[in-house]
Image (tube, rainbow, N blue to C red; front, side):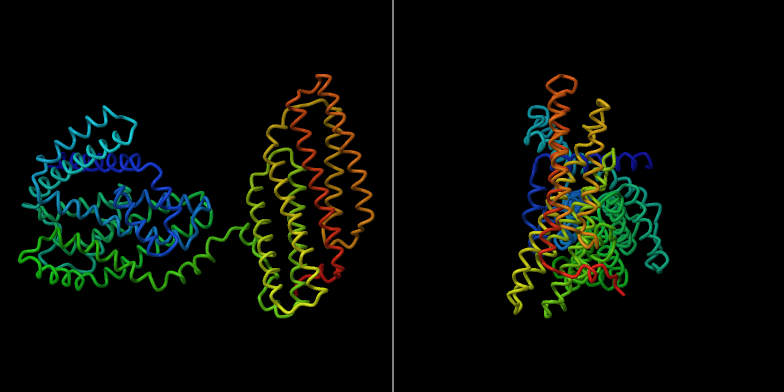
Length: 540
């Protein structure tokens, strides 16, 4: 019986894998399309989660895909949580397939033809959508053959052994079965396996309805481990999606355990209206569906609060840096104060962006965090732009109104600097090979002069002098033209490869543009005629 049970479980897992993998291949880009384009509202997100999970027969696959989309920035938290909630309802279809087909029909009558027809389709049209659908048929057939073996095994076992006491299930026993369901799901990484094992054990008389329901609750809790494992190495948004999955399953499990006996009694009472002798497997499938739907109902009114609460969790350094520190709504009512707040924020973006540029020019190896730093600059630029737009709606004097476009222009300069910095950082691997020492010395001198100019261009420095900067920029331009001419000569002579010459010229051109943008930003900011000493004061 043990050998048969292991074999039955193996067939079920093989069938589940074949079916899930085949459906994903047959669906093509449907998963991507649905997750990205059809989740704009709560109901649509819920529907997409339910549909895709029912189609693929794997809530874990949908959950992992959702986490991936959130990590890539294609899904925000508000959208992602409803897909996750929907996938919990969608996974209940496995129980209904097992209950309505696996226990009510002679398996071999339809399972064996499905396997045969599916394999013919797979062999003839392998690699196509028809071949993938053939694999789905094989998977269905193998899955139900596994259920048949498990059902027979548990029937024989249930005649001699019972894992639950005679109608008296205490709290400790119920919690033990919850833990067992959790453990099985963690080991198998599939709540569908736990559900199938529970249904077949229930049908075979190995366990009674109450502990079976506890096993299913434990299985639902166990699915959170798949999401947790897939969140390792992801960004903060993806971690928040995983946290929402854990919260949903935890809340649902706690409420279901509290209401376990009344909920089962209500389901049995409802079934009595439709059939005189309701089967325990149908009752369990109903229970699984009801408690997942109950979870969605419980989460519906508090979802926005959950999103808000999670938004303050798993924060990264970049998120804190990318959040405006001085732009508060209260300042909008006092335009002069709002202008000062904008100025303070520009000082931040100036210091941050130019430090980012200097790091990229200074270091010989590429800086791995440069993409995140670029995102910080973009967030600050957008925040300043939105705040400026809100300020325009106030009753402003002409003097302040004229300053706002200049502020926006300055932020655009820094956004352009961050873009150029990212490009320089990305091309560093291509510049790592050894070149002529004379050329390298001049390149190093060019880098040094560039960094010195950037340090002078930081907004808020007491020694800022526009006239002096313009003079230094002119000298820097002369240095650039001299270096470019040297590189072109060496390329023409053949002492420097044309490909290498082109890459170096491209990089020094980008550095030149960074310095030009930095000087322009400072020059325009100085035209605002603000008090630099005030801007340099630290918050009390």
